[in-house]
Length: 316
Length: 218
Ligand SMILES: Nc1ncnc2c1ncn2[C@@H]1O[C@H](COP(=O)(O)OP(=O)(O)OP(=O)(O)O)[C@@H](O)[C@H]1O
Ligand SMILES: [Mg+2]
Image 1 (cartoon, each protein chain N blue to C red):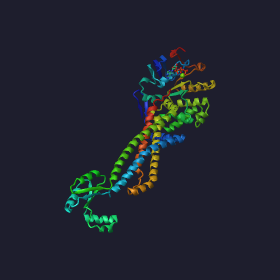
Image 2: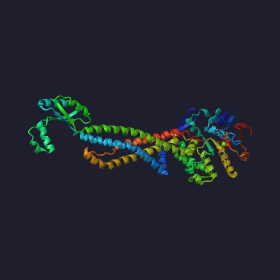
Image 3: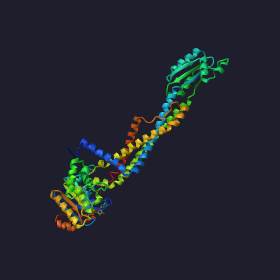
Image 4: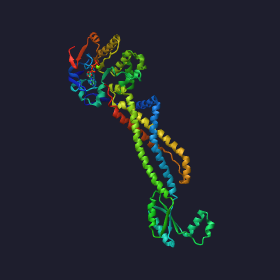
């Protein structure tokens, strides 16, 4: 089957699927083979791409790891609610049920002054000394466990507005701050990814442009004997895809290397603040996303370069 | 096969390389294109290859008005023509075989056919034994013949040549002309631009002569 153009020229004999595949395989391997021709230049380009891809992915990994560490802590981070002196138990229990009915609260445990003192004795290790006290200085207390991921500041303000409540204390306010900080880092990672992704496109665009320059004569000859733009650009696009794929693989390796190298210092940091804080390397889905992103950026960079510079090369 | 109707070509700088040129080249002819340096021979061939477009008049090639061929379809037009252009010589990083196979490769010819046709073309120019060599390992005359094999490998009806014997000695030139005559004998239409007046006389073929872009009487 041959297609005829409006002018009467046969334009394309339909290629079989097998032939189509084999043409693409040729271009694919051909472009990889060219890497060997200038190994140093190729390696430098690959490293530049890898670094550009691994910076945002490292930040992403950091945010992800700290966030999962925070979830662990927040489960044990209660808000202490102290009742005003002289509030009777009945009122306190009313407040407890009001707090329990709040959406952002998952549990609220009531401690009578006696119980509070007892727990304090056990916890502080000052048991003996405290028995000397003639009067129990502790007020009745509610230990409120907020749902994970809730706005704790708002919760505290709500509880403080209850009349019987004297004071609300949350020891993990720094957790809130960390969360806000993480959000900023997350944004930075996004912006960085956008900027560096554009960088990857530009780097590859330039690499492919140089490749086109160095093959100027070849392109002209191929066009003279009837090669289409698609034919000339095919190996170039594959070249971009290879750069992107290999760059992303190196970035993945670097990111996990970073996770491994940071695991020790983070361990000691974790003991100070967050229990179970460890850098979780990229999982297979994230690796896939990274590879697909690398391939896409590489292809796009090559495509832009080909579109801009190939059609300008004509035999003549 | 080729028809020029009052064709003019003005280059972007304003220089008019062809002026009101009309002629017909019937199918199966072998014709020489002559004229002084700068007369417009290469320009005329470039118009046929759509490497340049006529600014006036129309060029009809193989029954198709070239003005109607869009940029996208130019490659398909070129596949129907064989060319030997001096400055578009061989790809130096590919073997003789791969160079000759190029027109078949770009048009997606079946692989089995490719091997057979490339060897047939190389056989015709007497270079069958050199298929694995690189162009730099060949003499100038041999390289020129590889270029000719590349021009005929896909069996075009029309063959254009721009100074195919440019810097070859008379003996080699004669060889190549003999080769062209052989192709013509099997029906290929040929248009050959050349300076080599002696050669043309000896061949006794039709001639189109240009003088400063105008058709002149030979
Ligand atoms: N791309 C171009 N832009 C401007 N002028 C051009 C261009 N190409 C050719 N010319 C001019 O057109 C005229 C004809 O050129 P052409 O190459 O067709 O001559 P020719 O007959 O092939 O000469 P030669 O025998 O030296 O190869 C020349 O004067 C040349 O300077
Ligand atoms: Mg010329």
